[in-house]
Image (tube, rainbow, N blue to C red; front, side):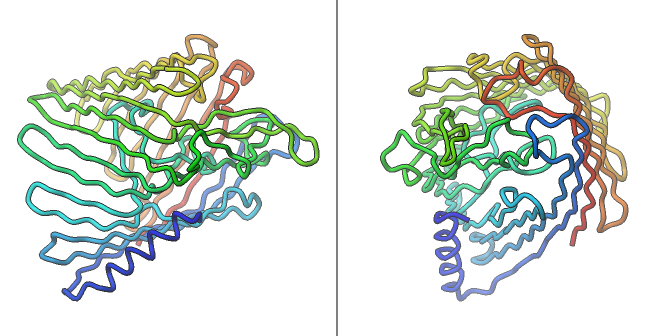
Amino acid sequence: MNVVGVRVPVLLFAVLGGVSAPLSAQWRGAMALEGRAFPGIPLVEGARRYETTMTFSLRRGWNWDRGRQSLTVEPFVRWDPVNAERTRLDFRDLSWQGRWRSWELNAGMREVFWGVAESRHVVDVLNQREFVGGGVGYGKLGQPMVSLAWTRSWGRVEVFLLTGFRERSFAGQAGRLWSPLSVDEARATYESAAKALHLDWAARWTHAIGGWDIGVAHFRGTGREPRFFLDRDSVGRAVWIPHYDLVDRTSVDLQLTTGRWLWKLEGATEAAPAGRYGTIAGGLEYAFADYLSVFAEYVYDSRGSRAATSFQDDVFLGARLFMQAGEISAGAFLDRGTGNRIFNLRAARRLTDAFTVALEVQVFAGAAGREPRHAPRQDSSVGLTLSRYF
């Protein structure tokens, strides 16, 4: 855990220790054991064919002052017995919240979500994403921040001061989902002279008008998505060096509900030293019933082959089915430029009140060499996770 992650818990526990009013607390937790296999030929020698991961999370909340103030603590542990770069001790949430009439103040380490699309959330920029977790998606890192929100009849305005930058983490050459070259995170560079201590800020307005849900936001600070430069390590091997630019990013997200139809759009434009670019993700969702929905969306990134994502000109089709004891979701990304295709399937079932099992399958059809150079490598995999909740 970095320096930023150490300061926040000290501050929050000091606040809690000074509270003399009666507190109410609730405990929740989960443990999971995941196994994942990669049937394809690895990109580099030494990359693993199998991964085993154990995760543990615990969440506790305290409330006082007649519910107007609360403190949430949610530590998270991931342990990989082979690849130390995937092992992490962190906090998903470690924050205090105060609510008074139309005002809300938050301070601490939090996960904040923005967006409406099913395929990709191009407006969701406050938290850093890590590329070391299992599964077909990437997890978020808790972001230290202070935020103030004001809610009125014309909408909700929220201002964020982001008090410490968190670098993206990668799984190293032993991991299957990055690239043939290692990323030397220790040599990361920044545009800002303050480096990770640069104070970022963001503001967002949201409102619901009839069937419309509207969000408009602006972010100014260190971009969460690095660029990469090729260099050599101490023994002469080629490595990627991440570089973090200062960016200005303006975004909008819209959702229109009309009967069983949901029309969704996310769009963002970002100005950075490497040039301005735009991204969009949007489409429609149709609910046949409360338990079955289908999706059709389009994802675009104007950087094309310079993008740090595989989804720069893709059609997404998907469906989700809720059942009494579980759910099944499936999706397919069809790249219009390269012809590559990615198919995802996730099926989860509750075994008992405390245990669930989930199967995740990703099939990559195409050529990895057609993907953008700095995008995470796509690969086929099969994962099975057993979770215990308490």
